Length: 378
Image (cartoon, rainbow, N blue to C red; front, side, top):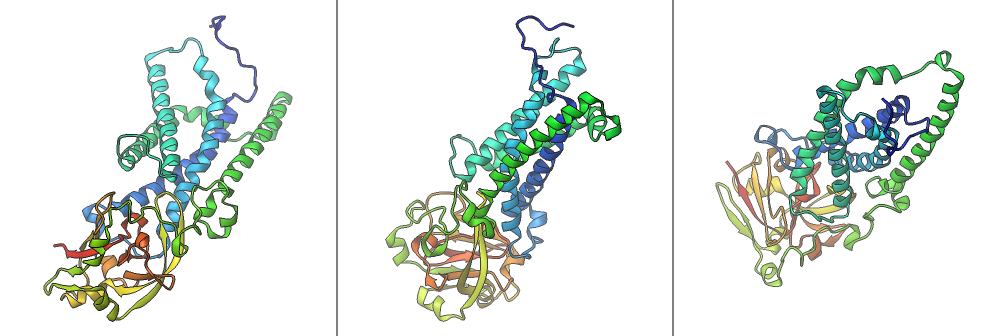
């Protein structure tokens, strides 16, 4: 059926299934990596009961790698998605707009996929700069949208499978002269797209990939910027830490033999030094040297020689994660410390003075600062 006179007519040759398929393959890889690493991040932050006792503490930089990949792949997906939408947007003006009930459902599923993906990437980018302009929980909505995207994407691929397979690959012998010209234009488009994706990745990945840190011109966080050589997400002032609370500080450890320790008594215990990274959900990470008392030694003194599941309570009065939990894989690990020093210096207030948790393969939001209580959970 002919288009109504008021609707635009598209003469560009690259608004075709072949180009959409080629770009879609690249976008699919980015989305898959982003989804898988996002699932890892979610379950490390809030593991269900059946998983909590089995979380791995090795490799020690596991979360640093997976969360870095999550933010890198999500950032790379932005130009890929924009080009993908450019290749297919003339279909918005197809006439008639709906040909059947099946076609209407197909267009509805595509609308859900596009809307959810755009919102997911938009929220993810704002999260990297800690700018939350919405009234709802970022993490919960981000998690829910991820599953909406995967479900609608699988439905879309099932519907479009014949078209995708027909355009997945073309042999040179199958190309007509016009096809060859199109292929040249397509390669130019892909070269430009690859350059854009490469530039965005190269100039942002340095916030988590140390060898690229000097090139991180577009990254929202410089991992070298901060007191004691480490960035700070939440300052002591933002967390509501008062001088009076710090002066009266004691560490209370619950267990079969509960006890309290002053800071001097804590410093008198055997001190251990480890090198572990801080890796935050926003995508930045950096390794540092930490010194303090092993959590397992504190629990052994309370009558729990093989570790225990803990609730860790902070002095903080504002902001999330003032109370966190840590299961036995971490509490009995030799690298898990109640840290008192960072990079050879006493912790500053913004880094958690008097004491903070540092543990291997653990999200930064769970490396609790200003720790005042270790409560044993059943």
